[in-house]
Length: 388
Image (cartoon, rainbow, N blue to C red; front, side):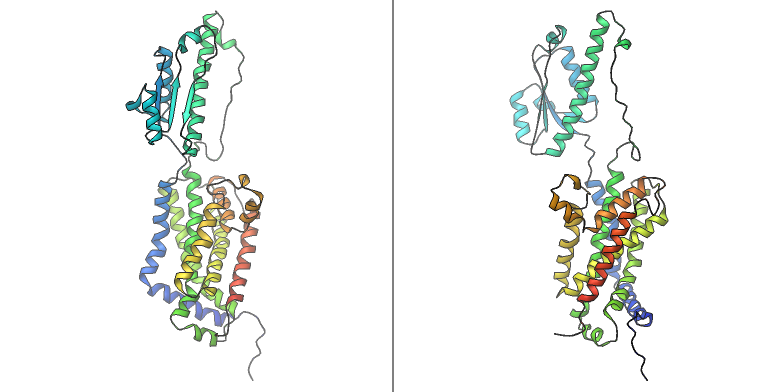
């Protein structure tokens, strides 16, 4: 008498699917090499290309005063290491404007006439700094640098005036900021870009790997065999996803090693905590790929759907580049369904903050678990046991 199916998952049905998927991965040498090398190559390329550390801003200087003070100000800009003074348009406003229009320089420093004389007479003097608004990010940072340099020059002038009047400069009351940055003291953008890139790259690669599994069965005419087996949809999805979890864990391990050894990103957290949150994230990414694979008609559609469903949201709505708090309310609400958002927070916290435990970032883990469960369940629901 045949045993009645109790509705529980059966490991004897799941294991053959896992073995079949493992064999497919091992036999497809080219795809295996791409799956293992692509994340590392993408990490290295984008880690060097994406940086918020701007150290060389092309600057044109127009000095109408030609005094020792004006030369000191220009030298301060040059010595700061943030600006590269363009000699071709030096002291010519017309040439500086032309260079700014043709993207030869990004900013212009205009030192007015009678600067030194007005300062000696105690008059207020204004320096003009012109920026190229078509490159907002560079100019915003450059204006911050220039304000700091000019403020330092102004402070020196004030102290010199105090000394010239016979007072002790040390007795002048001043408020001096003492900034201190924790976790990333040098404010190196690499330290938070590399963990962010790891999340985005793995979101794409993981979803891409599983997005081709079911649709490949359709194109190879083996989909009918799957439908005719006693496999339940959820058993099929679990059997399909486990081999790719192992493959993606290897990818993450290599990426972490490259980040630590090549880019010298500090790792202050726990590898155990990292592994757990990585599993939760892969649960989401691979589940999303299975949903796309179950509904796509061919591999081209699956690849396009994966790119649109993972890469763009992960870059734009995860907080990797743009702060979510600055976005409109409706966009902030949409960002809550982007798994990469939670994994990026987890990675940056685990990498840079010592003592990060499971409950330190429990909220991110909870969301990843919820979305992973939803994605796997939805992919199982999308798998039809009938042939149209």
